[in-house]
Image (spheres, one colour):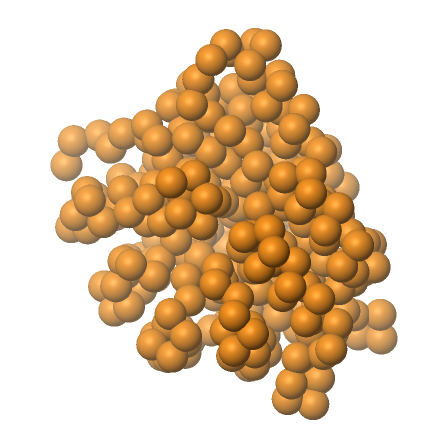
Amino acid sequence: MPKISMNGVIDMHVHTNPDLRNRKYDDFQLCDAAVRVGARAVVIKTHLGSTAERAYLVNQYNRIVHGENSFTMFGSVVLNRCVGGLNPVAAENALKLGAKVVWLPTQSAHNHLRKLGKPVEDCVEVVKDGAVVPEMYPIFDLVNKYDAVLGTGHISADEIFVLVKAAREYGVKKIVVTHPEWWIVDMSMEEQEEIVRKYDVILERCYAQNKGVGAGHGYLSNLPQNLEAIQKIGYKNILISTDGGQVENPNWELADEEYLQYMADNGVPIEHISYMSRELPSRLLGLD
């Protein structure tokens, strides 16, 4: 298969410096790489809260340093304990500043802490007693008001089903199940097929996953699993993201290119790859 083009790609999940965990690139270096390969957009993420302000500065930098081009960096907000959990003020401030994704708790999620054997007393609950907590409904309202994407974060597979059902019934349109293949989330392929069939959500399938949380554990490629998901579930509900930025993994643009090339080399039609890495994220970000 000929070398695949990165022109126009969009990645909705990349980690950058500044962060409490060292990342491969800082925001500006990621911008340089994205412009160099002709990417259309990247969403930067931090477990520490909002990246909307950082994205604004990067876009100013881009125009000054690179001149007029098609690349835009977007921010997001993660509703961990450090921003007050399911805090509508933190969410709306980020959305007003241009954030495009509201992620539910990641490192503060009950499921995340439980899987790591950590105390759960200070977790941010999303689902309790088989239903979403009342604090979720203002978040649903904000996601709808700002036409943002709701990402499920690091909650469990069981919690995802409860959350997605409630969100759909409330009228939330853009729902992305965050890296369902990751061992912390641990959705089986059958569960992924079911949630797509029932609720028409998007599954964010990422480049690689760590073998243990934190540095030094190494990473496992998700590409064979991702190919299987595309074949079983269909490309229309698969979002290609890297969840990149770890120092253990390749530079962002190399990881994304490897991902796209793997799919092409294994028989996924170019137009399907383009949909998962360009058209679908463009729609989610409101670029089309």
